[in-house]
View (cartoon, one colour):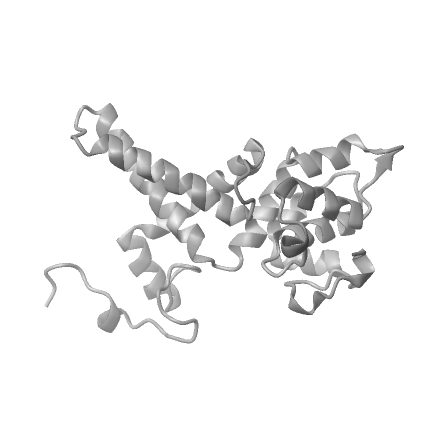
Length: 226
């Protein structure tokens, strides 16, 4: 499969579009920070091929690292002889912070439930760990911490669609930093404030279909309210 053979109709972006970079930056603001030597359009194409929910590479190349290499070759990231240039290599192995953040933002833009679950398990792990460090842990604490850690690992792999392989730690760092920033949305007071301000829950947090409109007095209440 070559880049020209990719059908963009099911992808979030048309990777063949002349204004792909402009569209990409409008949807993924994190990409505005990209100032690397590798051509912006090639980098945007690479992220789409790797991160899009409907990328054909997920079926063609189920192996995570082979998928990354294939995407890099398809968009023709710069090479010297038979090796990627240092800038291209940093992108492929996950050392480019802006590309990592843009990829995480891309996947998050779908509002997938596994991301909301990831935030929830991070909150649970943090809460239970703080109890242990404060001397208030109980007989269930170790089991809760172990199970939460396992779920975080599995949800991380599911987020990146990397199968049983470990993602490069800097890619995970980008995801976990995003989780820390976003998990405040899980607090009840934040949910209610968001509904009062915008009329709807934060992206990815509503259990209802996308066309369902939240009514604060009808759908949410504190325990004890009549």
